[in-house]
Amino acid sequence: MSYERSKAPLALMEQIIMILVFALASAVCLQAFVYADNLSGNGTKTETASVRAQTVAEYCKANHGDLEKAASLLKGERTEEGLSVDYPEDNLTVLLKITEKTDFLEKATVEVWETDSPDDGVIIDYAVPLYSIDVAWQKGGGQK
Image (cartoon, rainbow, N blue to C red; front, side):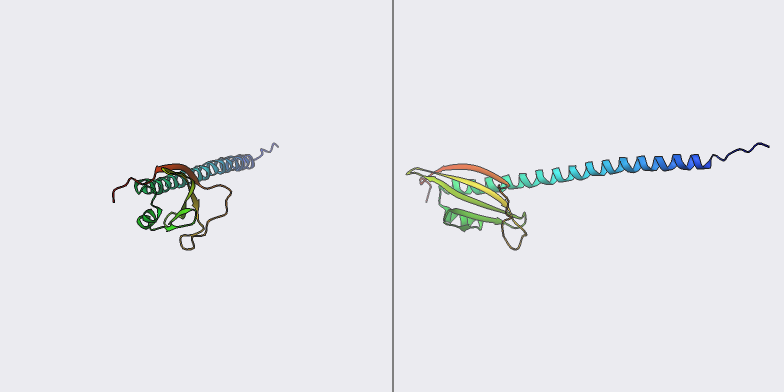
């Protein structure tokens, strides 16, 4: 009498191995999607920061260094060092710091910092700003 073994355990083992392979492949794909989403978010945040910094710089240039006027137009505040403008909708704070003053020229650094939440305006303690540019403008000469 000859007994034939069932091939069901072999088929079951094959299916389990296929499930493991697909699970590993899906984990790798999921990591790639999460990385791509983070990269996209960082790019969007940096682009928004650059637009905000450029806006503040252009207002200062257009007003020929009159930071009081620029602050009122931007709904910011004049500080000892320069100018501070909050953008709570983006969780960003733009700080303009005067770095050099001469009789005809002013130079400044515009830095964009990330804030904790839209309501508190507290700058997150990172070592470097999210975005930074150097600007210069001619003093005076504007129409009154």
